[in-house]
Length: 404
Image (cartoon, rainbow, N blue to C red; front, side, top):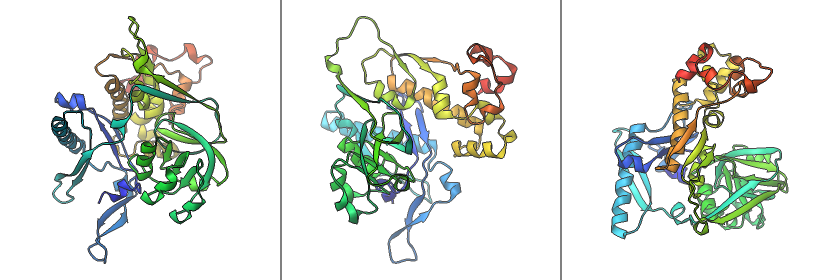
């Protein structure tokens, strides 16, 4: 019944659990993200086939598929399985585990466990960092798989019967992939799909091949044309972008095992929780500055007062808030959750080293750019010396936001 997820037909919900804290008896669900879940597979009781796909209702798509309690139970079981095989093999043995939940009884079951063969095999002593040196028009956006950049000529392949039209080094653009596509995927510079999540076939294969993929774009086969020059960038966080043209980018390789460590403690500045796990692999002694305002801008995206005063918003703004906060009946709880997840991700990535977080120092014009922000921010001639920092926190007009 999980075939739709494995084959990438749907983007599932995602949950991250921090294993070291789980071992200590905490409930460390540090990150959760609502997937689109367009289809589900059910038993075909009336037809000739064993199973069939049905559309998922908007109500079910707008809520998480399992509870946090279920996630933590599965995490406990996964840890026990990993520790069992690690003890048997005598080496660390990360596991790829499949599970199921009984729709009637609510019981959870482990149905498969095998060694994980992608992330656990990566060399951690060499770090390659990709950096885009120029910007262009964004043609498509989706989920970034990997952290690389590639440019080339687009080839839109509508279905597997046309794979002979694909040439090595091109950027493969299609609706969705399955194992029949792998011969040309191995020769592609990058992969861009309409559908799929981080566990889709395209995502899994691209990780194995070490090429960038942008999945779940919805409109890639319409927005991109065969023969068009495009740069596929997965080096800007969780959002992958397809830029018009072959843009310049830099690749820097460092073997961290060969770097001398100074006696001085080296603390990092970090902004994006999405890049925290990658950046934590760089030799460091913790984080000297993590800026909360970047979590506001990239994870929360909505002005705090637009969440506490949701009922007063205009219909257009309320619709945008609803889209961002899908899965949360309590809009204020969304703010608390997202902020906690961002901070928790930073702390988990660098654990047990210290992480120093600076509270938001956004200016009024920056708060105004958040969804609904223009309704609650005054226009200032010089925002640099205006309503920001501590003066905002203790001000009566921002009291509700500070309480969050």
